Length: 83
Image (cartoon, rainbow, N blue to C red; front, side, top):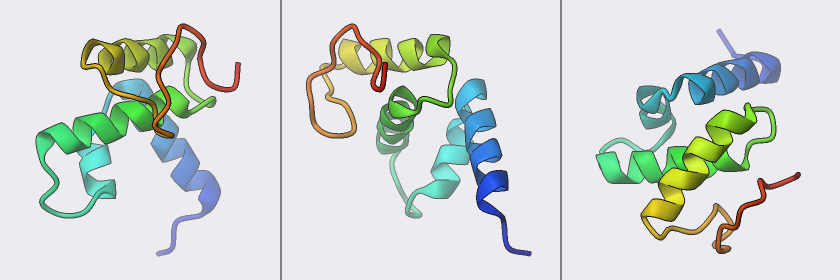
């Protein structure tokens, strides 16, 4: 069965709210390292306006603590994207 866009977005948003790294692993190429999965997950969650600010801030702090940039390669500041 083909997943609708609406169903995918609901699944993604639920995974972001739950911190579901296994969902993220399924979305990425097979064999992706744990580090790659975590970085991709936090960059995507930080950038996603459909996710609660609390979860986005959690990802922002995770990325900043590792001296990583946002999904666009920009330095992360205190403001959430799109806000």
